[in-house]
Length: 253
Image (tube, rainbow, N blue to C red; front, side):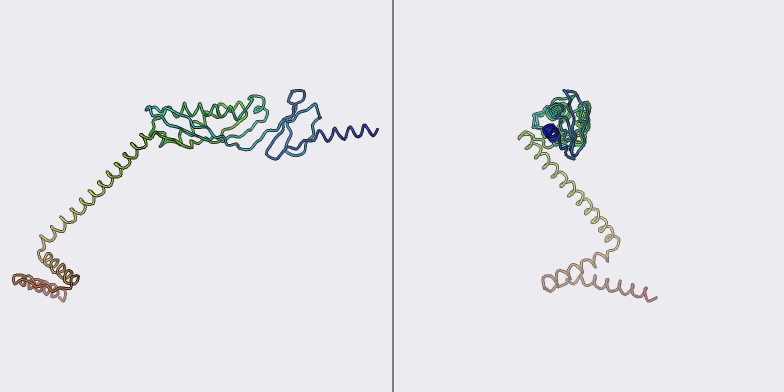
């Protein structure tokens, strides 16, 4: 009797299995799936049942760098990273032998096919659209494996050295072009203001003389010097005084 109780106790202990919070356990009995164990302490029949755990966490899968020929015949090295998670533990075991390896291979093929349809400029400027296209293609393949592709990101795009120099020269030329356009627009606005000022002074000669006096006063202060006015300039000063007197008389009225 004691022997039987000891045997039962040993079998009970041997059949205990712990499934972690982020896992689920698929139970095989004589090679056939008979159930799924939830997280926590579980018991299976020793030597008859086999428990295979499936990780339900999001897994990061780096996609190795590969050479791709773009639509405009430029060779680029593209690397990416994919994020996926298992949503059906039975399919992930029964439908595919190695989920990670399969996703890695199909990801490389999909990236090569999709990126090859774009020109180099489109690859550099429309990376988000390309990422979505790759994720859609991968998700369609992995659905039968009980796996969902959450995100695919192109991580790095390496251009040939000659292409990098050409693009750097193009960017520099574009910056110089914008600088020249801005300078030309500034000159145009400045010339317009000067033309408007000239029209005003032509219509009001006294304004020109006042400006001359102001400029000479500024030069005198800055250089700490004395300005000698020619005789013909005195008539201008008298005209300015008359103008100011007339203005003051009109204001007093």
